[in-house]
Length: 393
Image (tube, rainbow, N blue to C red):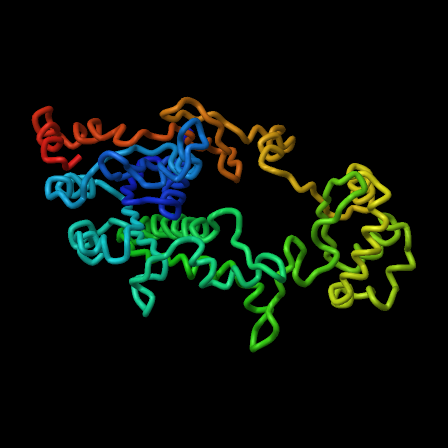
């Protein structure tokens, strides 16, 4: 079946997570993604860890379905190869150090006159202008600058999220902006310049806490796994040592929760708990009441009673629990993809479309496609060897 981005070629000067996550999703939709890597070691994210049969967990997650071309971009001959690739490319993505791409002549302003249909997407920590333009940015630093750390964790200790949420946010906005630019080019025939900032991406995701603290109001407190402003909403222990996550959204659910789950319909009208604001204010007292009831039940019994009351609930899975999740298994969301160390499982992209299947091709080895791409550009054995001798590839 035809995929949405069949025929689209993406050149990516990428490392770490934000840009690779963006371009992997373009590859999922059928785009040809040529990943430019350093000769030898390649993308430094390849060495983050060795948890996937000796390969990096970060790398195998964000780099399937790509072609790896090694180029030393400080070498004139390597830049000539890149220039040849750009002649037929649709999109250039880069998340190099601030200003590095521009110094190599790879800014939109430099490329657009020669390649008017080219879409150039620059991903950086803070954007291409402003006082923070030249600051280096890593995921934890952006979580700090965006206020994420101020609302995540316990009252005593701020905590970063367990995944690279700033990188993921930037990668998602780069991905959707590129799709939008491709649609626009279909109407105008013109390429676009996209400037994606990690700070702006994650700050957008901070919308509710920001508005909660609007106009000098008190910001939401750090409340561990509980909701900062809705209660009961979070983890509760059962009598067998298990943990159940539950969430109430409105007063109708609160009344049913009291009657069916806690077995005390009259509690719904207790003046300490009769509104969400009061329940949140008096959460310590309410937690004791809930825990007293749950302590007499096993985890399955608590879940059964919550299901009977149609109260949203979930188990607190660990990673092994997610790998074996019955819902993901039932919907056949895991698929094998190749890698330099053999087949590994990969989650199909979210969103099932009846008109096409996602591309799920192997994770490349460093420089695996260098020779085939150079031959495609018309280079013969002698020319390829000359590039090797010059250490350009």
